[in-house]
Image 1: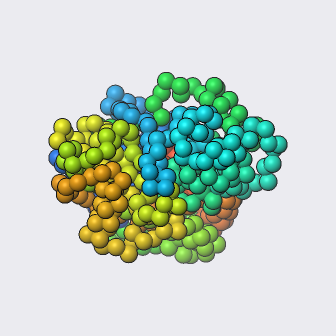
Image 2: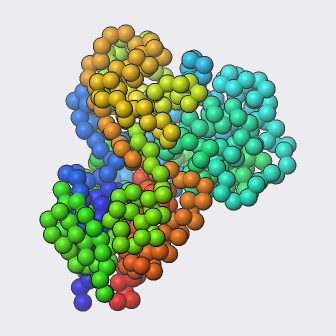
Image 3: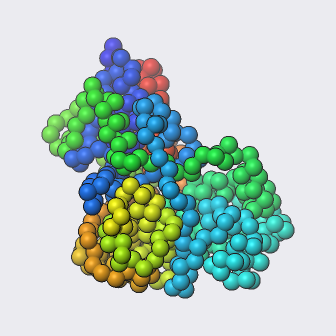
Length: 458
């Protein structure tokens, strides 16, 4: 008997789930995407005549799922790594180069930290005390900020770790679950008395010594999405088809769209958590919990300049802006230094970000106001004179889920609610068990496996 499965959401998680499910000949799968394009927060468009990403421009290799999918799709030969890994942080209005020995912003070498002048001498010495302090873990559900502050002090947390990790999740590390938001740090701290010693032991045991930390594509991350869509070309995939409700009758689901209703045996819901809550209004406990997952918004302005108008050498991948600097800018990727193929000899490209948890100022500005404000800040820091050659605004509204301490237990409760109230419906996406492209790929695969296992019970 042929079983019917509906995948809601055409981001990387939904596409991956569809690809796995439709491999089974006895399953008929349909994917519904509300917008006109696939990929979710992955989008590559032309800028200065070149494909430049509007969202993520690479994926991390510390976990295997991104590389594995690229290999399965025959894309591994197209992968490229950034040409530079060095970066800067703004401290009291001055750019300081990040010191050697950082792991997710945590310094593992005292001398480079002191030479960097990012933190004061006493703060650097305080960070070094981590090696000698007793194990003072307070228990479960610790935040990243809590972990760093108790082991290394406030300045390390505020000038290094929060700007770095906060720029990835658009979050506040004082409210970011350590186990989910920075598992590398949490594992090191749990397995060792000293965070520094734990991170050094991880480095020794790591098999990634010669592997780039990040990988991308010369044609942008949209290359991955396009190839993934082509790999499921024989499946029924529909754009501009927003789902308005998901209900469960005796024995099957009804997925209602703006055009029709589809009956099916199982559903993979690969949308942001707040959208999933709206679609699952008939399963109130799960909907309420899904609604409690907070999200942050980010605006990214891609800027093109004449190279001769930029006073700074842009000798790195970009700069981080701590909250304490009081600027609207949160980070700036020096795109044409990080990815030299993004620009020619005459131009440079920057990707400037604004917005994070607790800072919604960018939402109140229209595009022109946003560009003007960020341009003023960046031009002052990087000694830029002259006008923009080209600019582009990309707004990612409520696109960054915030993993508060205890997030894993919240997700487990949501899954229990669904098993009870809507058996046969499975979740996937950045809101649940990991942000970033590889984590979403993994969740897509896991939801597909759970769906196929469920169908065997019918």
